[in-house]
Length: 141
Image (cartoon, rainbow, N blue to C red; front, side, top):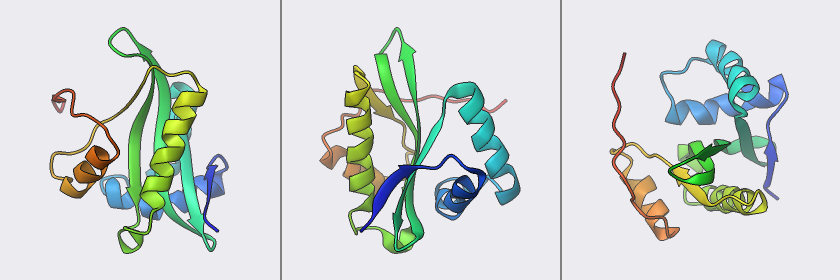
């Protein structure tokens, strides 16, 4: 039976890399562990995963933030399921778990950004009753 758990040890974090790499191909294996650990230390980043038969099949990176604009919020940095395991309910299970984490932490809101090219993800988020509430602007420096 698939289980959701936090990935906190070096090995558990490293086991999430193949899944995360599908969403973040610019992050290399060598830098992944160091960056995740740095984000955990400095930004309270958490990395959750779903394992099925000993294989990590979906991951979510998230953090709790508080902003004037949103109040206390669970912000999802990363949410991805292995391409070969999509449409098996893992993404939905992880999404629902994240929403439950936000509720347990008394968050006012639940937020994530999604690349404009991720049409399948957008259909999923809309089906999960999320609203498109803003445009996100960025500038590479």
